[in-house]
Image 1 (tube, rainbow, N blue to C red):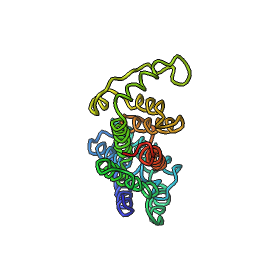
Image 2 (cartoon, rainbow, N blue to C red):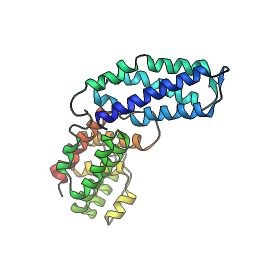
Image 3 (cartoon, helix red, strand yellow):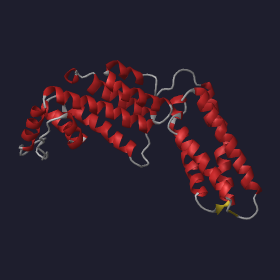
Image 4 (spheres, rainbow, N blue to C red):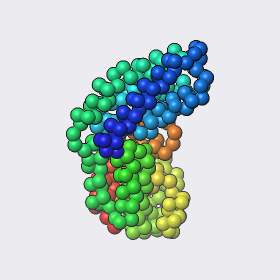
Length: 274
């Protein structure tokens, strides 16, 4: 997302939150039953979590400040999913607005330059094939718009495609042989690996070999070392966290680390050149 888009979203969120607080304050009774109020609370919460939460640290706002607002919008969402106390609504909305301009709007207005999380990510395209670039251009587009989880999923797909292609280049028979050798190990680092593969095509490789197992075979084969394996395993874990529901956030810093690792360990690795 661009700076102007972030500011527009922040201002829209502030205006909506102010309007909702005024509406709730004017309601009669102690409990909010209004479906319109609930719907608006859910809409504002989604605007925060889907459009702003993951991108603000890229525009000069520290993680502690983002963390200050995260539970407030989570609370608003919870209130909006059921009939809730009017006073609680007003308290949460008032607390959200208290330092909003100083905490969120002013730092983005002062921020100059490119967002931190997208500044150097496109360098990975320098090392990608045309086919891989199709994944990566879409992945970087997701990052620019703040969809960091989607970016990780697509970026990992491109990295795994390169790994698959190098197995195809070096030979499926050799891949099968390495997996069988590793299965035969009785102790040491590879002693717990218990799979021997028999793939004969790229389609079979993609369909039958899990990414975690692929990394083990690549290490045993000597295409990556133990440290590189560990770093790629962290990237794979981030991919899994991104693809499934959970509360672990993907931050701009996470994204930068992810793309740095797959670029250096996979796309720029001399052993992975096609």
